[in-house]
Length: 191
Image 1 (cartoon, rainbow, N blue to C red):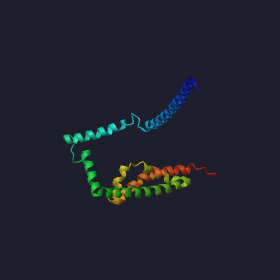
Image 2 (cartoon, rainbow, N blue to C red; image 1 turned 30 degrees about the vertical axis):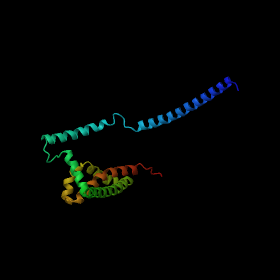
Image 3 (cartoon, helix red, strand yellow; image 1 turned 120 degrees about the horizontal axis):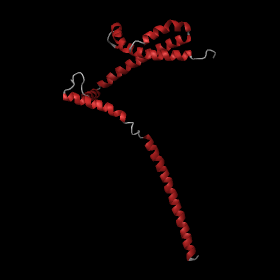
Image 4 (cartoon, rainbow, N blue to C red; image 1 turned 135 degrees about the vertical axis):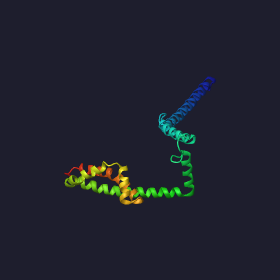
């Protein structure tokens, strides 16, 4: 093999090595580009954090207003004291007890309201006679704000658990009732 042939063979080999290296780099760059694109897609949009500014500003103003004496801290303690109390309740184990009591109230009220709303909605949706009898009264009761039920439930059921569960059940009943009644009424009767 002549020197010129050796140089041509070396140039071809160098070119193929260089093109293979470029191809590997391009593939790695494409993988990096895909990774960068998916990572950037998961980041929140620049304007998404703007919704946090107002609540944080209110909390900051509240803290400063109480510490400066503009607002009495007895009825509206500053956020720092609220956080300290939450930490102390969690450390003592009382927080879990209170959360459990609240969740059991919510579960009981939700179950009662959902069952009653489902039954009433199914009956009034299926029967035109029951709809004419019950729906006007239920629609009138639905117009009463939840806060207006509080004194009535306390008067009727006392201040303990039953009045709280009844208030939650009332809040759940009407949306479930309306949804089930509308769903049953929209079912094709020919099926």
